[in-house]
Image 1 (cartoon, rainbow, N blue to C red):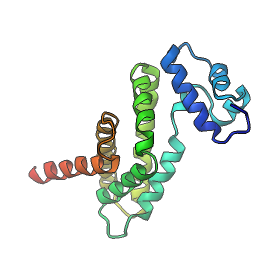
Image 2 (tube, rainbow, N blue to C red):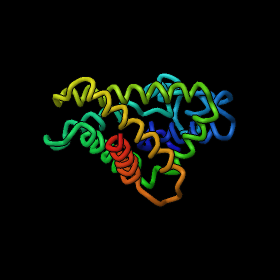
Image 3 (cartoon, rainbow, N blue to C red):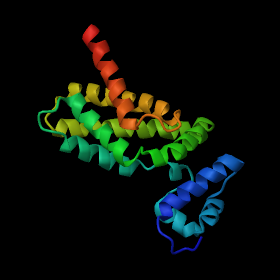
Length: 189
């Protein structure tokens, strides 16, 4: 690929995923990732601090989540504001065209303890961002924490189901199903 082609971060992520699958995470270098993407090592480091981070787009997700919680209708209950944000992720990030990439990415993460640890930290950070966004809406701290943590759990369960299907349900629909189960369980207690 020529260096002038667009979407360098996406090209780097795709190249890294291919190489991680082919050679393993431990046996892949930044230089190899950059070369596979048709870019230079310095271009790689312009977008990512290390090879681990090439599979984690946390800042973009954080921004979408916070923005969507903020944009939820004012009368939304905390968990509904979180559900609104997860719907936005389903529409903008976890789309049908990303399903295969997401499934492949998850397989690479599952095979590497260092990457699983990074994914866990990412999820904690995203939940913390949801808590902060809810608190800015005036939600009390404990309620914000419960709603955000339940949302994060629903996200995880829905994501696992979503990558396991070959084109069936949309991510947003799966999240809503999980949240409905959460509500039903809570009502039964």
